[in-house]
Length: 154
Image: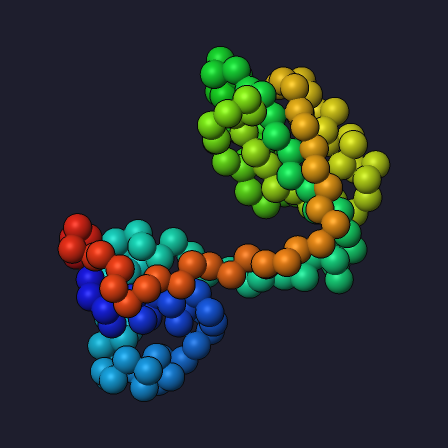
């Protein structure tokens, strides 16, 4: 992995639909070379997948919230399959602190959110914060040109 790969990763995070030609122009290498690099980045697991960022409010999912959950380790075997099956969960992370899980969720109404929180409470204590506005939307992480890539094996 080199600085050209970092440029490719940054460009794909900004626009996953960027053309190979445009990437080639930005990186000063051929389109087939760009394609080969992207394939290598995918097969190595650095590029996981591609997604469209949706405006959930325009799709009537007006309630975004973060829910913290105190989950006992013995509950994980039942909890993880449960959260995998709930499409309203955008992200679920195991974290440090009083609460061991934090979930980012979207719902059409506060009633639906309340019903979901009640389901979650079968696993443990919860704390819910409803989002009023988002000052920095999901944007990926712009890797700096001087990022240390010496430890990454192709």
